[in-house]
Structures are given as C-alpha cells and as structure tokens.
Length: 360
Image (cartoon, rainbow, N blue to C red; front, side):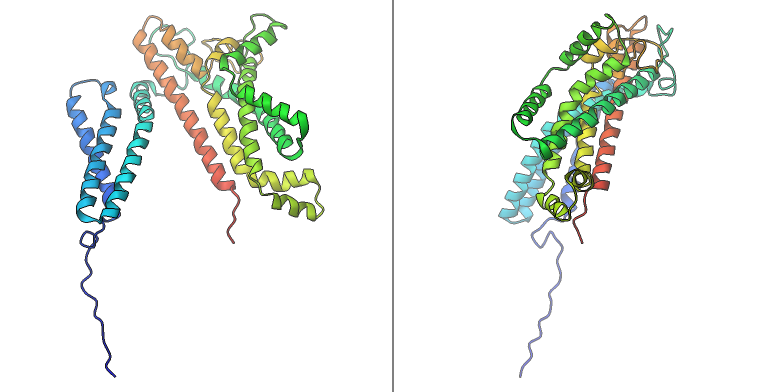
C-alpha cells in the first residue's frame, strides 16, 4: 500500500494571500490623519491656534484614508472584499461627518479655555473683580449644589413613577400619566423657569435662590428619568418575576430584590444622562437662581451663580477687560464639558459594573 505524503508549501504573508493585514487599515488611517493635520498646520502657519480648521483636517484625512484603502483593497484583495471595504469606508465617512461639529466644538473650547484653566480659576470667585484675575469657584459650587438638589428631587419621583407605570399602572390613570410625561419631555426649558418663578411669586416676588433653580431643573429631569427607567424596567424578563412569585415572594419585594437589581445598570445610565441634559441649562437658571459674584453655599437664601449663567454673564458683561472676560467664559465652558464627561464616564462604569451577568 502506497502512502502519499503531502508537504505544505511555503506560507505566504497576508498580502500574497489576497488579504490585507488587520493592522493595515489602522495604519492607513493614522498616516492619512497625520498627513492631513500636517498639511493644515502648514497652511495655518503663523496664524492663531483657534483658527486651525480641525474639522476640515479630520474630514480630509478620512477621505484620503478611504481612497487609499479602497484602491489598495482592489489591487490586493478579491472583488468581494474590495466592495466590502468600500461600504465600510462610506459608513466611516458618514460617521465622521456626523462627528465634525462635536470635534470642532471640543477643539474650540479647549484651545480658548485652556489659558485660564489654572489654580486661580478654581479657587477664587468674581467678587470685586472688574478686570483680569478672578475665577469661577462660586459658579462651580453653585452648579454642583443646584444640580445635586435637582437630582435628589427628580430621581425618587421619576423612578417611583416608572415602577408604577410598569408594575402597577392600568387603565386611565396610567395613560394620563404617560401622556403628561410625554408633554413634559417636550416643553422648552425656559417654560420650566417661568413656572417656578410664577410659583414663588406667590410667596416672595423677585426672589432668586438656588432651590428655585433646582426645582426648575427637576421639572426638566423628571420626564427623562421616568422614560429611561420605564424602558429599562420593561426589559426585565417576565420569567424572573414569575419565578419570584412562584416562590411566594410578594410583589413589592420582587421589585426591590429582582426587578431593580436586574435593571440597575440601565437606570443609572438614564439618571446620569438626565443630569447631563440639565446641567448646562441656562434659561431657567437665569430666571430662578439669578446672578451673584460671590460664593454662596446656601441654596435657600440669596442668588446662586451656576456655570452656564457664569459663561453667559462673562460674554454679556465683560467689564473693563474684554479679553480676560472671554478667557474666563471659555474656561467655564471647558469646566462644564469636563463635568458632563465625568458624569458620562461614571454612568458607563456603573452600567458595566452592575450589569447582570448571564454567563455560567
């Protein structure tokens, strides 16, 4: 009996095998972006960093990446793979176009705000400051206090409302609550501020306090918390509830021990997103919390400055030194963006940490 021995031929690399290496698209993207940024830097030579066209540089870099990758794929890979690359780069270009406003915004705020991102900005208020110097410590504390009180008010109300709609709500009352939550979701933010001003006008006309700003923000937060929590609670499988009921566990304990722990990651994410949505509101805080140049930690007495109002005030009332006021405004905007980014990172961490594990 003759034994046939097959010998393996030389192993070729990915290019000779008709397939681009996995690292090749990323290398082409990095090179294209570097080349585009270098070209735009040369064009902007001698100009201000704020005038650098970051959106154009990123867009041109992605377009160059798309062209090079498709051409290289057409030469090296099969026709099917080349068409797949073409579809992928078209989606990438569309995604880049959607991101261009965000990229431009972040670059502009960072370039203009980094000049005053120093210790003085985070340790001094604007009391007795008419020119250079001063900071936004009073606005930072005001934003944290006002938003924190708004969260303490909104989260329990919104979460309990969503639990009622999912677990108990039936009939006309549940439909009415759903309808009004939908209406509240779409109201302009300044209407919430006017509502709180009209409410407190019955007590003390012309009053401006931090608690008024918190109540105005809570009007905007509650429908967001209700909607996000409701969707997360509905995603909990009914089999988990039925298994708990079969063991004789009452409904309220099933909600506390089974439903809420299962959906806690999504609920936390929704709460963080609702806080991020209201923390930058300016119109309702202009009417309710008011203006002040001094640090005020008492939310129930005297006006309280917040970062959005601080940015608006520095742009509208620059004082004797316009350049210094604009630097403070940009630094305040950068601080607000960082706070929102930190909140979103915390939400992602909580969602990943407390997400239910389905693996064995």
